[in-house]
Image 1 (cartoon, rainbow, N blue to C red):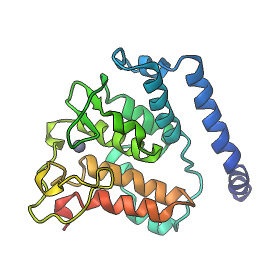
Image 2 (tube, rainbow, N blue to C red):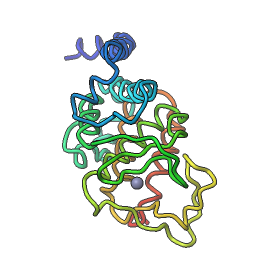
Image 3 (cartoon, rainbow, N blue to C red):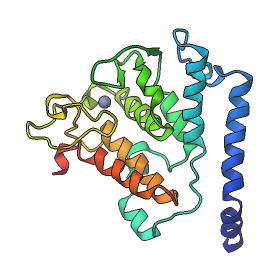
Length: 223
Ligand SMILES: [Zn+2]
């Protein structure tokens, strides 16, 4: 066991690179492969956009989850990923979870939002593709959760809501349906995902914690 742990540590970077390589080569043959496999209608988006979405899936799949960078006690007491998603964190299974929740993807100009899940289609704005991969993965997970039902729709944020949106700085959140009144909505799922990243990622901790907190403040029952 100890030997295994050591081996995992030594080869972490190699595994990380390998995973990226595997996913890249998988998509390289046919970039639409994974989307077709899940019967997702991508007929209205360009090949270059599909390739960009594949990079998001590769990013999620390559997240290491072998070594904790927080104490096991802390992780066990704070992680809600398994409770919410129904499986232990793994980028590959998380991708499956996301893909199962998308029926169709379309690119369209959106006011105030980067993405929208209408229930029948996932609409992405052009600016979605300009976000860093981590942010794109967050949006994808957020929107996928909306596919689980109308009961996960947002509520309008409180009148005096003082927080800024990380993805859309000038959005006036107090006027938008950009908050949740439940912990298992889209913001709760995104926060649970970020907590896994914080726990399994040795770097970018300040950024990840900022994003984690930013998702949690959108859950009004929390305060
Ligand atoms: Zn939403």
